[in-house]
Image 1 (cartoon, helix red, strand yellow):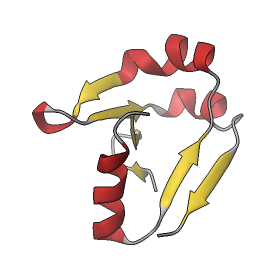
Image 2 (cartoon, rainbow, N blue to C red):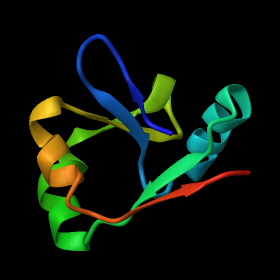
Image 3 (cartoon, helix red, strand yellow):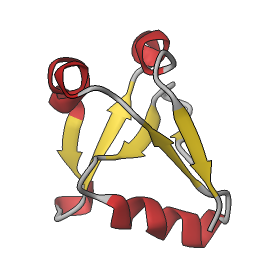
Length: 81
């Protein structure tokens, strides 16, 4: 599940960093929320938000509230493990 912090951002693992989402799920036990975003939208809107998580190798995205309307247009699947 993404986490929304006091800064108003929602944090996700990047597409190739599923292990980061699994790590958070092991701790919080709330499942993994997968969002299916088309490649063009991801490349233009979300890829610029990618940053190394604690120095790498995993990549996280801190999505600000002003992008939530775009994010919420895409299908989501909550995967309980």
